[in-house]
Image (cartoon, rainbow, N blue to C red; front, side):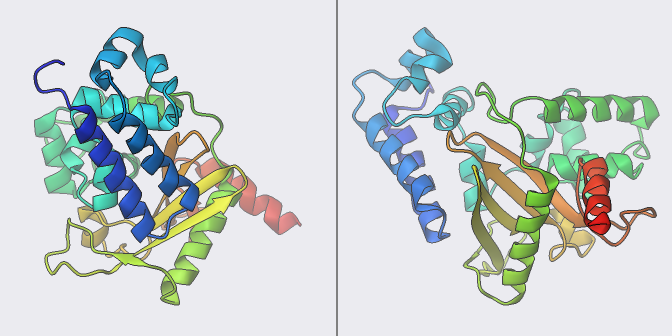
Length: 288
């Protein structure tokens, strides 16, 4: 095994922790069991996963018992980056500077500026700040660089979410808005389990409601945005982050907000990045 590579037992430990956290958050039992079974498979392997991945690639991981494409992508991420962003999200400890560096052209220093000066913690917030002209207003950025970031984000959104895995079509905006509405309704009625996010929560309070829901082929996790930007703008009870996955555990995400910009969508709930589909959705609903 290569120096510094995660061992099978370390990876199995991460998979078990994800299973335990999902269980505490009352997630779909199918997913809870999927990570638990995957951990058992990994613990029982004779060969290091690092060797399998190096010699057989992504397909070698998918071929393992109980390891689908999504979990294989998670294992690949742990092997190549020595971390698993999904688990960090479950813990409430995802590093925004690391997240922002997924955009080509955004290095550590610029990611730190986006985070500290604009309060941006994730790609959806970066997209929103670009749309509002906040990024190009930063010293040293300008219109040309901001345009490059917009193009890079469009490319990221067009690519599969599961890294090397193949991701199918996204849920339609009607489904996303329906899950958003259910989440906000149940959160307001105090009907959801709450977690204590590690970031922006100095008192360690369990305040962040979590919803796990199922719609057709899609499984959803919904929670209010707990980013520096959401706190600064007073949007922690408005911006809702929706994560979805299919039966292969390939994932995607979007943020749903109340639109404040003038236009047909003003005052309505909107899926960031899919505004045109939201216009079609509301127009169709009104016609009916």
